[in-house]
Every structure is written in structure tokens, then in C-alpha cells.
Length: 191
Image (cartoon, rainbow, N blue to C red; front, side, top):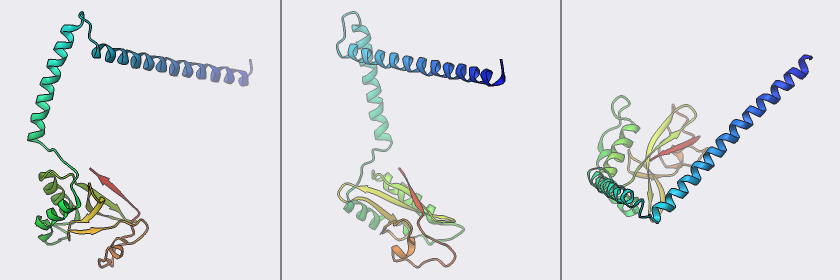
């Protein structure tokens, strides 16, 4: 047998094994899915044979639910604020009073402080990282219930826009830095 037919035979065997593996995985997945559906149906209409299991399940569910409620009251229960709530919060928040310092207090510090302060008051707030060609900048965002997503420059408590391909500073009425190209390449919103 020459090299060509041997390679072809090996290739066919490899393809057959791969198809067998994929097919087995698919069958196993479908079986698991069907069993889960069957279990859900059995939970909805318990038989007398499984009655003890259903009672134990219900007790466990209720205990877990109550524990979850306790965790929420000790943790965060965040909501999307209205535009007015955001503006009132920013007027009261004094994070922007701290002077900017390249060594001690930069954009990320403002973003973190305002984000934490908003969440401590129950408002869902995002950190936004703006990517420039060679560096970046950090601001915050709120998904308001009445005016949609708004972006805020936390150093100045000013609402800003993020037009891709344009200067962040010029687009928002700030002085453009001499040493940085602040053209917005893209941005990431982190909730």
C-alpha cells in the first residue's frame, strides 16, 4: 500500500472517531436534558411515592430562600436610579473635591470612590474604561430608568458623551491634554 492511501485511511479513521465522539456527546446531552425535563414535570405533580422528597425539597428551598433574604439585607440590593436621583447624588457626593494628583489621586480613584458611594446608597453604578490609542481614562455610568445610559466624568460630576473616533476632551468641553491623544478607540462598561 502506498503512502497516499495510508494517509487517506488514517484521515478517514480520525474523522470517524471524531464523529463518534461528537455523536455520543450529543446523545448524552439530549438524554440529560430530557431527564431534567422529566424531573421538572415530576416536581410539579408529585406522586405519593415521592411526597417525602417533595416536602424535604420545599423545606430546603424555604430555608435557602430565607438565608438569601438575610444576605441581601446585609449586602447590596442595587437598583437603576432615575436621572434626578443621579444628579442629586452627584450634588451631595464630595469625591470630586479631592485635587487630582498624578501620583496620589488619578481618574481611577475618582471612579472607584464615586462608584462605591453610589452603590452604598443602593444605586447600580458602572465603571467605564475608555481606551485611547496609547493610554486610557476611567469614568462612571448609570443606566437610568427614565433617560437610559448616562456617562459621568467623576472628577467634575459632569455628564459626558463617548463618540468613537473623536477626542474625549474636545467632545465634552475640556481642555485637550498636550501630551496625550485622547481619541476614543473604544470603551468597556463594567457592572
